[in-house]
Image (cartoon, rainbow over all chains, first blue to last red):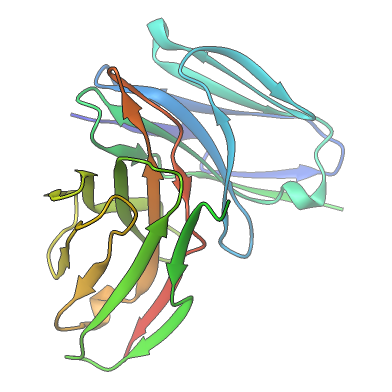
Length: 109
Length: 115
């Protein structure tokens, strides 16, 4: 079946620390995306990354499609990075975007 | 460019009432989706549409109906509201061409409470 699994489920960081979030996905999933849901509930697109590496400021993401995983790196974390990070993939038929359960991040000042 | 727009942002319904959540996108995307997010949980797919006139069920379709008469609009209908439908509802859209999907864009969400 279609599976998108994220780890860790929860993460607490001190401001300034770095972190890595992981997303494993099944063979029937591709076209990975990473989202940040802020404390107000808004879903913000971070990366559309079917494969390879992308960077945007303090955030970067790498997807290794052949090994079915994607990583989101957060460097020099800030309190505004707090929220839930979701990865999502599209099923092979291309009709559905399926979400992982998310990683809840809290960055302490 | 407004992206994906949902209305209303908040709504309280009584058990048994009905309502329609509106969603419109101005990106000419062919794919549109409705998700619900229960407190502390991820997003679950309710219904999706691959183009005007074509809709299909997602993971949790019971209690909902959709229609897609135009490319831009994808309303979600709740016929007999139940407390289990208390949730935040997100509409999204993306584009698929030549076997590849573009990234999905989400609306701001509709927070629905059924009492």
